[in-house]
Amino acid sequence: MIQNTDNKPLSELYSTDHKATYHIPKYQREYTWGKSNWEALFDDVNDGSGGHFLGSIICINTQPDPLKPATLEMVDGQQRMTTISLFYLAIYRYLQDNIPDKEDMEKLLELMTLRNRIIINDNKTIRLFPSYSNSNNEDYKYAFSVVIPAFRKLNKPKNYGNRRIAKALQYFNERLDAEDKEGNKLFNFNKVQSLLTKLNAATLVKIDVATHSDAFILFETLNNRGVPLSAIDLIKNKLLGHLEKVDNNQSLDENFDRWNDILINLTDNYKVQERFLRQYYNAFRLNDKVKVDRKPKALRSNLIDIYEQLINRDVAGIFTKLEETSIIYSKNIQYENTEYSTELIRTLRNLENVNGADAYMLLLFLEKKFKLSENEKIELINLLCRYFIRRNVTDTPPTRDLTNYFMDIIEQLNNADSYNYQEVKQALIKYGKPATNEYFEEKLKGNLYEENVGATRYILSSLELAQNNDREGYKNFYERSKNKFIWTIEHVLPQGKNMKPHWIEMVANGDKETANLIREKFVHKLGNLTLTGYNSQLSDMPLDAKQTKKDKNGNSIGFNNGLVLNDELKDTPTWKQENIESRTEKLVTKALEIFEL
Image 1 (cartoon, rainbow, N blue to C red):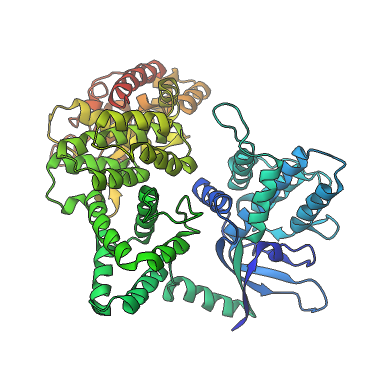
Image 2: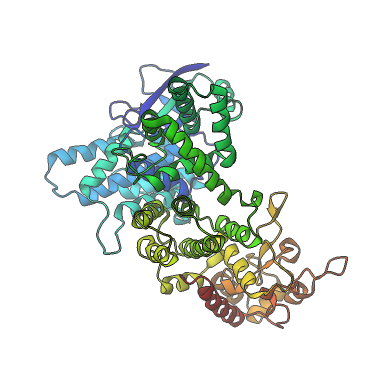
């Protein structure tokens, strides 16, 4: 079934000596990777020392003539291969635009070599052929024609900038052109050359099969039946194997049970387990017993290497430390199973809902170093929640910098003799580099729902909980039923493009064009949003129906549902642009108070 399998560097898969082309079947789904995927690829390659493993691809050679270049149909791997080629294209654009000496033949030759990795056959053929779904192929070719005009000039596809391929290329371009707060470029020609070297050294397992049937069977096996060894598995095997050699006091079974207890503390979510191992090292790396030479930060790409060295150095010691800290970590992520007070559980739930992953690293460090009282912990977590909702709304600092900034915060607190909330707060503001109040306010007044649905839910729920004074008791606005939120975000003015006549009349006195312009500009503003448990039933009903809607038992399920958020909405006779603007101002003012650092 498998003809060949090799772990190949990208320099070979995109070799200038081989004219192989990669064709993604026309019927395959569209390109779907987003910012988190692009960011992970860029950071893993840039932060590593080379040789980063990128996964696998499955190919069928559809070229019957062995004397001609291979024509490879890529059955699996289109997302990463498309992204990699766009990464190459962005690097080529940067080097071409920023070459310091146009007469430097060595650099010009390197630039030509890079172009020949992604363009073959005398610059007439792109090496990768994406699927046709959702204009992928058209967008991809246009992206190349913009960066390499000599290749082919094409008309810009309609709505090109709104689709993923254009956004991916834009992301990589922006990362390479990024500046710090002082306006200094983060990259220069030499640094981008170094990044290119690392990208060329990154590896993919290329699996060649003979037929589509073989490819399907292999794909199903890899994705459904077989589970590849993870970093956690490899670290476990190394640790238990080393313990068996050096520790005669406990049996392999006993040590295996101890390891399983650690995993139970971390849940059965692999991402959480891996995150803990990275955060443990990053939190305590300043300790000489934890620090590994030439490893200033734990990444996915170097995690195994770090723990191999820690295990070789002191296997019993690192095992005990992981046990102790996993207990602390567990209480922060599995808070529902603790004996914590109701207030602390709610506070930890807020931290989970605000997606403040790096906060767990700081909490781990502080709770291990100091014994925090419950009130101190609540105060600290509330501060972290405010920091992260501001970050999520403004994307400042960017996700890629968060771990580094929190490591800087820990470094500033490392020599403290006792816990001091004000010192932590000052370090968070100074080294965490949050957005200014002005920028936070600007983003709150923008199209909040469109830019970040998760942050919108958190802000709306926080506004309600801060104002309701236990009117009807505490409500968990993240509660789910059958994996769906019970409480949903409701647009007062419906967000659907086909506005009903009653809304056109209310919003713009019957002028459909004006009504649509108002909807486009204001529908996702904070002032047009609220929380309701019956979103699907309210939908685009008239305003008065949304206000007075009741279920068969006579319970109000419209805006008259008891939430403070809906006090203004439940009685208003009309809902126009000025209503949205006024309510936005009120809610933003309250949000600025709640989330003040």
